[in-house]
Image 1: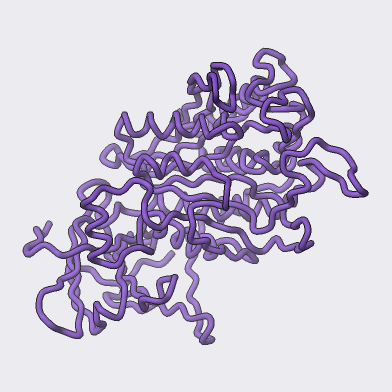
Image 2 (image 1 turned 120 degrees about the vertical axis):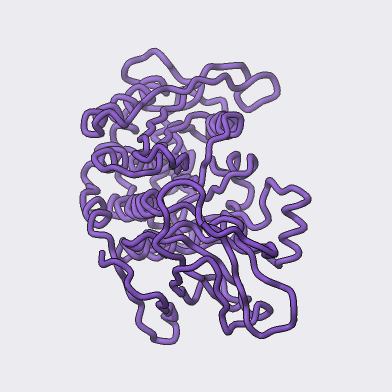
Length: 456
């Protein structure tokens, strides 16, 4: 990509008004997306289905069937990329104990997550990006650990996306560390994700984004018979599950109910994903998850991390947790022949684009604030240079009217303070760091500015 040469650039994003949208793609990110193989994704999904069931109480020792065979195979697939990573990729099991009386897993059992860590190349950059899918499956009854539970879409599709990303991204270098997780325990209470979120909290991981992929391969709905592989949902919490009194006070003061970190990540996925993947619209769903159900991003939200769920737009409930059979003329069961592998390929692409762009970007601007003293129809924003990692080439000021869900304008500046002819009462603002190649950090929603901001 060409270096940013202008000190003041407007990128207008008004498709509903017929305005042009400028798309600049990093050629290396585009090449990675082009390497995503629908054929390999199908091979991964069918291999996951071959384990018969991946129920959390199924066999751990059978070499061909059960959850143990599944996590052993996933680890072996990830380990194939160690050589290509020049030793930067580490793959290991994370063991934990789950279950007990009164729980959906009625007795304590040792489960394993498979975790592949692609270490960043910048020793001064401690940021971590997490991408996750769950490896377990089940039939309709929680306790049924023996029936055929293929789990092709739920969540073989997410695991396939993870494996493709490990294969492709391990051959490249990123300053930021990327962690790929295949977790167990999801179907019985998000146990694997809870374990990893608690570990990350206890060890002070600097997680800047967590993307949970759960069911990204079904393009047709039951009942309404919709069929569309050109839309995917991103679920994001509004008011954070983890919110201190200080955070709540700031949210109320700034009217930032729709501008928490998860919402900024969701908007980022939409902008960057659609920048790189054609014929796919990222639909932002402004709730944490679907009614009565949950996903592996939620334990990370509960621990205060920035996490979202990526999920197919149309769900087929004839296949979810059903034992394969023909019932009233309808084929039930989560079988591999009903996965839309082109759809999984595109959804893998938005994940890869998001993670790669964010991993290459500078850190977020720090101590972002909006000056609120005095009566004026202009807005002054102040911030500080990121304290770690590469120094930004500049910053984007993001602007939208208060009723709009998405950012409408991006203004490029090179300093750490700007005054704009937009009233802070009529617009919301965000600030992003950006490097010379155009890789943006997540947007930071400004609080009240400090009286003095140190300049570096």
